[in-house]
Image 1: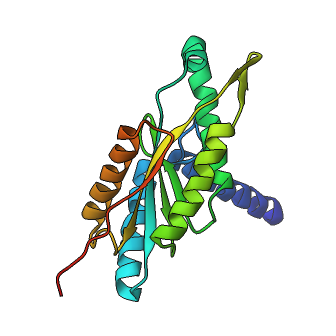
Image 2 (image 1 turned 180 degrees about the horizontal axis):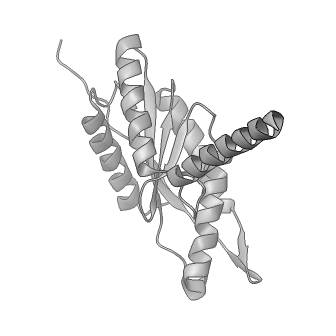
Length: 191
């Protein structure tokens, strides 16, 4: 009887952890939600400040949907979100944090990665997105993304400034017509 109770407690603990994890995840993409990303970002800023190391963040926005996606409506959009989630989960390391930031936007924290490496990795992801074929009800759809990349401490020394810098880089990528990765400006201080 004690063994059965212990097994039931273990099963309950596992179920509680699964429910808690699902609450942190966006059901459409399978990625973490924005709040989890913000927590990870705060921890990474603290760690990087103490250890004098760099990391990068990336804001990714889906470019305006093409006619096929628009024709399929919410079902087409759902398939695009699922594909984006799979690409981000498959293209990041366990120590990185990927999330669905808001309706059309995603964010990635690349721990211990500099600006040049982050750019190279995100350029590879951008290419994968541009060549990804998503199928729904026999219809093939494609999608592209715009990305802004910023790094700590090269483009900003605080979490807020880093997010503003990343946002500005994303705006520039969109201004260039989308399907583009843009780096945030590196700060130069007079010595």
